[in-house]
Length: 138
Image 1 (cartoon, rainbow, N blue to C red):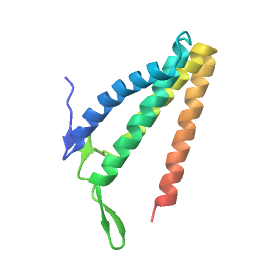
Image 2 (cartoon, rainbow, N blue to C red):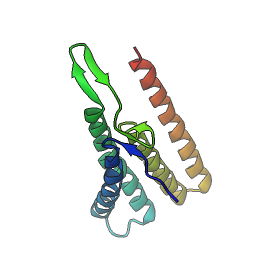
Image 3 (tube, one colour):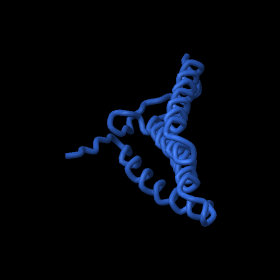
């Protein structure tokens, strides 16, 4: 049995993800020319999914989980999905996209290159997130 756990407007995550999937499929079919093959379609889907869902999820979370004060932005994180603030869930969409892109690389070349692409891109993503957290700490 799968439980969906959210607080406040955290349920929006479960609305944004399926809508993003549908939109990404439509964009992938619209962008990729006929006869390009599955790797091009998988790559287009992965990129479209991230470009369409991650910013929407982050902006909604940013707007709902913070408010402006005279000294800057104050975070309260009252709207969560499975215990995580909904703006943080946008990172999951980026990881899903990296998986799709590495699958496409593996289909075009060899499975080893696909695995190396996934490992390298996840390491780079982790490094960027860690760097961003370090630079924004007060």
